[in-house]
Image (cartoon, rainbow, N blue to C red):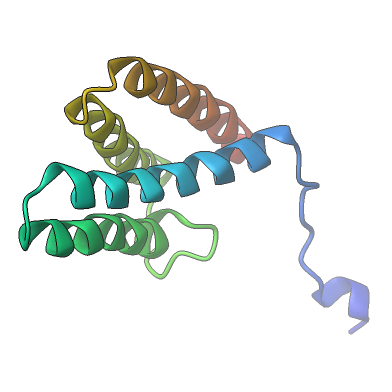
Length: 120
């Protein structure tokens, strides 16, 4: 067996891949900021750590390219919608509706474009 046949063919990284990664990171950071700011002590420590950790675990287990549990495209979309919606609502709860709406629209566009690439 040649070395070429054992390698995995990977699509080149494009703008939508980079945007999606930035959106994911922004969602995780948003949930941490929301947890630390929106809640009173000592719950702010718990929620500030638990909210992004839960989102990261959900993403790693079900949504990431190297997911632990393989699910269909619909299931992946549901996980992504849950995480991104939670981040958008976090901005809304922090009194930043413009950031919430802009984030939701960028996440939606990123999800649609990346989803189209996955289904191709």
